[in-house]
Image (tube, rainbow, N blue to C red; front, side, top):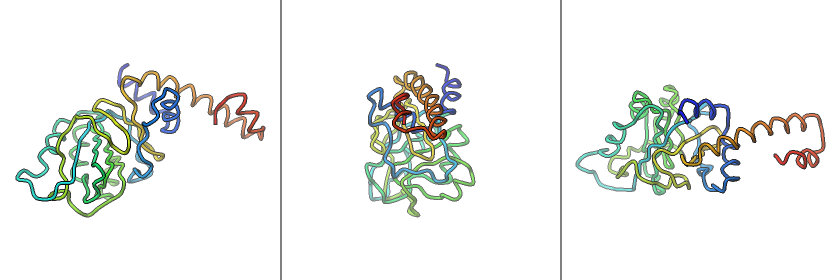
Amino acid sequence: MLWDDVIQRLSKLYSAVLCDSLDHLEFRHQAMTHTIRPLFPEARIIGIARTLQSVLKPGRPGKPYEKELQALDTVQSGDVIVIATDGDFTSGLWGELLSSAAKAKGAVGAVVDGLTRDAAAIRRKAFPVFAQGTSLYDSYGRSEVVSYDVPIDCGGVRLNSGDVVFADFDGVVIIPVGALEGVLDLAESRASREKIVDVEFRKGRSVVDVFAEHGIL
């Protein structure tokens, strides 16, 4: 599938119906933890994962931010920066300047299962960032990106660079690239049927009867 076609199809969908479709296809661990939230309600991401692994690393390295900067220089249009922290909440791993750099290279968002900072400035730049919270602390001397484009566990989801990231106000869903076409087909079907069920419910019909007819709730 052409990526432009994928974006067009995904743009009409939402995270919950994608998660339901992944569940149906036995991909049952694709939604990141509910504590990863958008910095602003309008934030929405549809893009291709670029993975970074950060770890707790006290002490000041000789080359600050080395791997993180290298990773940012490889970003391409449509990428989403996805940073796994191994549960590290000591500092803000993302911020305004990294958002500027990523956006200039064509990135469409960032997801961090730790903390970010510069939240107000990031919102002004309209760069979608999802994180577990904010911290004033700089990552230098506290946390360090040690690798990128490697398999990571982020927010409870195992993913690789190249997987598809979809994020909206409800949360973050990761679609394995090999399952994308099947997930899209099923999600589109479910979304269409949900609209029918919504119409039936608004008529005041029995919830039990409507569910029995359509199997969607």
